[in-house]
Structure formats: C-alpha cells, structure tokens
Image 1 (cartoon, rainbow, N blue to C red):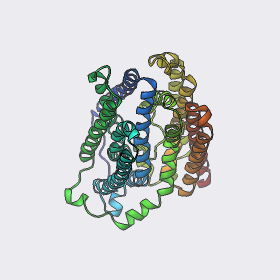
Image 2 (image 1 turned 120 degrees about the vertical axis):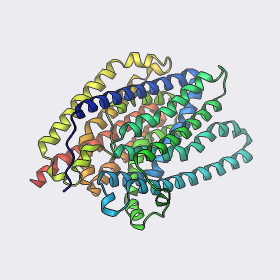
Image 3 (image 1 turned 180 degrees about the horizontal axis):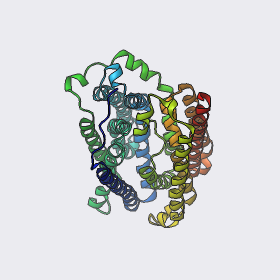
Image 4 (image 1 turned 45 degrees about the vertical axis):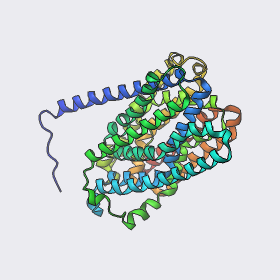
Length: 428
C-alpha cells in the first residue's frame, strides 16, 4: 500500500488560507448572482424579463438531459479512482466524453436552427420572437460542455472551480450588458450578451479542466472504448430522471406559463440558489470524503452517518432560517412585482434545505451505488415533480413549479437517508 505523506508543518495554515479564499469566492459568486438578477429585472419590464429567463431555462435544461449519462459516468470514474483500474486517465476520459457531449448538443442545436429557419420563412410574423431565442439555441453546446466539465471538477473536489468560478462569466456578462446598454436597448441585445457569457464560461471551463486533468492531445482524441460507452448507456435512465428532477418543473413553467410567471419564478429561484454556493446541494458528484470511502463503504459506521446528518440538519436549518427572516428585505430589492413572491421563494429555499440535509446520505448512496434503488428514488422524485407541475401550472404558475421542485427534492433525499440508515444495519 502506498503511504500518503504526512502533512507539513504549514499544512494547517495553508488549509486556513484555502478556506478563507474559498469563502471569499463563494461570497463574490453569491453577490454576482444577486446583482445579475437585479440588473436584468430592472433593465427589462416583467414580460420581457420572463421571455429572457424562459430562454435561459431552456438553454440550461435541455443540455442537462443531453449530457446526463456521461456526467454521471465521469463522476463515478473520478470518485471511484478507476483511472488506475481500467487504464484510462481522468483527463483522457474527460476529453473523450466531452467530445460526445458536445456532439450531441451541437446536433440538437443544429436541428433547432433548421426549425427556426423554416419558421422564419413560413411564419414571418414570428421573426421577432425567433431573433430573441436564437442566442439561447446557440448557447446549448456551450452550456452543455461547461456544465459537464464543471461536474467533473466537482467530482475531483474542485468544487470552487466547477461551480462558483465558472458561473462568474455568465453573471458578469449579464451585468455588463445592463451597464453598457442604452436605456431603450432591445431585448435581443441582452440575449446575445447571455450567449457571449456562455462562450466565455465554456472557454474558462476548458482551461480549468486542462489545468486540473492534464491530457495529451492525441490521447484525448482516441475513440471512446466500447465498454465505456456501454457503461454510460446503462446510466441513461438515472441520468434522464435526474435531469427531469432538476429541470422538469422549470421547463414546464417556461413552456406553458405566461412570461410574467416565468420572471417571478426565475427571480425567486436565482435568489434561493445562493444556498448552493454555501451548502452544496444534491449532486451525484461529491467531494473528497467519498473518494476516501468509495472503495470500502462498509467501513462507514452508523454513528459517523448520524453525525454527518446531524451537522447537515443544523447548518442547513440555521442558514435557510436566516434567509427566510431576511426574505422580505431581500425580495424588496427587486421591486414590484417580484417583492410579492415570498411563498415561491420560501418553497425554493425549502428545496435547497432538503438537498443540503440529504447530501451526506447521497454521498453514501454514491459510494455504495445500488443502481436499482437509486433509479427508484430518482424516478419517483422526478415523476412526482413533473406531474405536480404539469397538473397545477395552468392555475398556480410559479407556485406550482416551486412546490413540485420541493416535493421532488424531499422524495429523493428522504429515500437516500432511509437507504443510508438501513445499510449499516444490514452489514453488521
């Protein structure tokens, strides 16, 4: 067995500086998230803001379905340290799967562009709408690649690189567009700025991946091994279920709800997302604690799991409670009609709370990887979320999407906690 080197005398100090730097990056990321949202809703009227966020949601949700199985497989490869086992370095596999992700999303983008061009000819009155949504369609490959790489970085315990830093580009592009645009700037100007932000985010993600996962040019462009493709295909159902769980209610709201409801939901959702900057939410790619346990998950005793769950409940409850107390003042920053969305905001904070509380149990589930039970949990949560939103969105709009997201999160995390708690019993 290879002996790990002992920490040097300055290890504690270095960890302290790293912790401070990470906290600072998280604070800046959360501030940019709030500021970008505030800038857009003050630059655009509510209906135009709804159109903007509708396009953004579609450009984010569709890639989640396209990359899902590759994202989970890449996470398993990194978390399980399979590079030494199957002989494919992390960097090589990242390039190989990244090419497949980019190809799939580019093909979908091409199909949508053909449909858009045909509608532009056949239905000239739709031209303004098509011009508005064109940048969001073009952004699909960029979003798909940058998010795929971000999840790989999270799996390698580079959470800050994978989430907060890469998101700077998009939020900064939104802010810059508002600052530089004239007061009467048309909506397409802001949508093209969004596309520019996704381009920068994709380029930044590629650079960060190149630094984190060194890979030779020739090695990365070898064909994907057949066994890798088969293993990724086996994760298709779980990946699609996870994508629907996270994005299904939002996409339903984006398609069927009025633009105003989309704007109200987007403001509440983007504000509640600051929880994810500080309390990492449900994610199938996890941190170093799982890397240390992934080979021998049976050595994780029940007291350790209970302690992890207890800390998650304590920290998540305290943080979310503070945000709830500050909710009236927070929503007032956006002005009407967004300042009246307390219930939607509270439900979305509840979803973030459920994800944060369940994160230790999800770690155990990833380490054990009981595919059948994970599939049941993800599918049941996704089905409940999609059905609730689809049945209620016409009457309740943003409130239906928020409630559906909360129910889905409670189902998945509740099942994960029950599974994790009973597994130590089964092994003793």
